[in-house]
Length: 528
Length: 86
Image 1 (tube, rainbow over the protein chains, first blue to last red):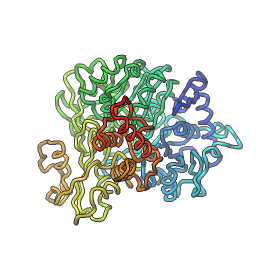
Image 2 (image 1 turned 90 degrees about the vertical axis):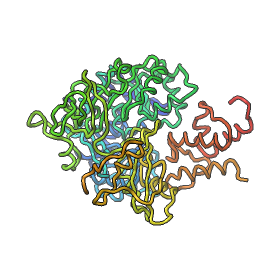
Image 3 (image 1 turned 60 degrees about the vertical axis):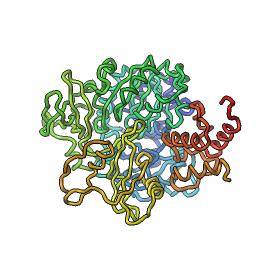
Image 4 (image 1 turned 45 degrees about the horizontal axis):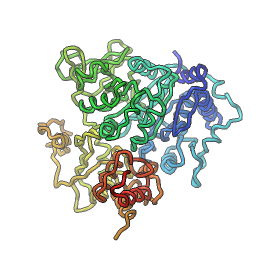
């Protein structure tokens, strides 16, 4: 019945000197983290006149200040949203306007994008900048240290912050329509998901979790949220670009939990000089975002002999849906398991009714982890959240196709819509195609995912041009300037025409099937 | 003939244009968002194909591959010391 930030107060009271976050060799204790979050909350109240329920957008790398801004915002009664640091101006401006953010937190190296986006978002009253203000900062900009210095310490704590059914966070997720949607999660939603996951992972206060996943990604964010709930330690890294730099930390910090996405697993299993000492302390490995190939699962088990490997499936709209108990892995390496504790899932027909084992249908989820909806997007909410068993209940229609075996274990079949997964991230072809179409000379464009052992899907843009320009290099440069890293196509293919429906809509499904070497689908798309 | 560093600069600019800013020799390519984990793999493959040496796993570190100057120095060391242990 408490708001989620109470876990930080509890951990700080219980084990003040225990490391909460280890980042770039620096240790932040629970007492320090707790005090810093309170200062940030006070800064919000005193310098930004932040009211309960207002939104604070956090546009930072994986660093201690990100965690401080998250918990500080909650402590001030607010709602946080963490945005990927590779996000470009247009999308950041969309998010700021969509959630009517009052405060934006960023860092000097991202300030150019942050200031340009904030200039287009009239709701933003303060832009807090870590690492010092650049010369061209707007009037709304405040250095981090100045923002955290207040005349009346404790002013945030002196007023009621709210209760557990209040909105706690917005997690922006790509939708098939192109614009990101803000998934609304209350404190109670987070508590439900975190309790369920820490139950099956058997998490405890002695855990040390090493995460390279961005805090903007719910899988990365929950590593922080769950560590704070347990009073455990989070070793936070910015990227996995240099595995040889990250993996020795497993041994140095005696890491017990190591969350992966398939791309990381693919990099790890290729390493020739893997030192067995790195793996000794690891008691569990988790994987989500897309399935691991069985060969990688077995190789991981060999490299990490003391670790249980958890295959999981989830979507931002309910955080996590299923987990495969590790002892089932050898028997059904391709299954994503069963509903997480305290929740229910079933494979449904078009009317939402359960179908028999072996039949393919949409996965439907019910439980306290299911989101409240998409922020100010009733149409999308109504499509995803449908009436449930009770008059007050909504269940989540995942849009993902599954089948169940006779013993109740679930298998992912494919997506109902055409979202691609690359490097563990969801990419809406529409969003990338919109950017391609903005380039003069691009007449038609389609984005497909080519199966790739490392990336899941390697993105390929198929383009029809008016003439010989733009070339592939210009197209990729344009994409890099307007899209997050993971959305940028790896390759470009030029064609004279693209397959279309009778009404002239590009049949992306045909191109996608071709890219996967599947049989070409029939005319399966409704006329536009 | 182009120097090793010029070749590397050219490769980085052509394959990882970032936001269009020309990377300086000392710029941290990762920090600047110019290369990511897949970019590092691409770079390793290109180095091996272009210079004909093997990039050992233990060499894939920011000090060797994190900046244009660092990559050039690493490549020179590998080329000079061909045959010596890494």
